[in-house]
Image (cartoon, rainbow, N blue to C red; front, side, top):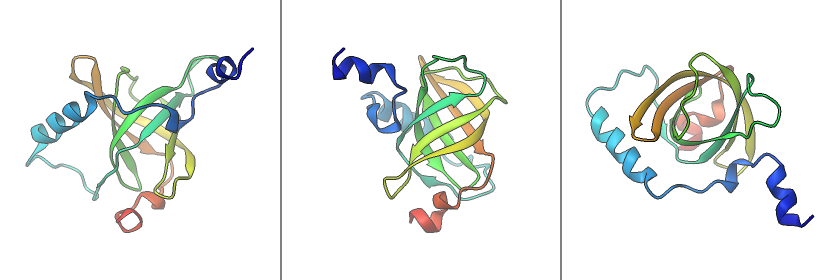
Length: 139
């Protein structure tokens, strides 16, 4: 078995997924559609990285789902994905922080709705506050 075949068998880490070309268009359309309707309590910071999500309900062998982050705060994360995700389900999201360190965080899906054909906009909250994603830390 070649090294390339062996790599395909392991769960993909967060930095091996690429940023799809059409994603910038989807994100800009979401931002334009939300202008002036901010309902969030806490300050969020734009944060664009590729993350991987594994739900607790996923069966063994189910590949992790790629998510593309929009913004973050210590309590929650906004993202876009190609997957329709079940609301209220918990899991572990793998992200890269600003220092390049991979972190795995317990989370719960709060929202997932179709934003464009084949794309879903969602939000998750972290089960514990993540101060590494505060505006002061990321600024």
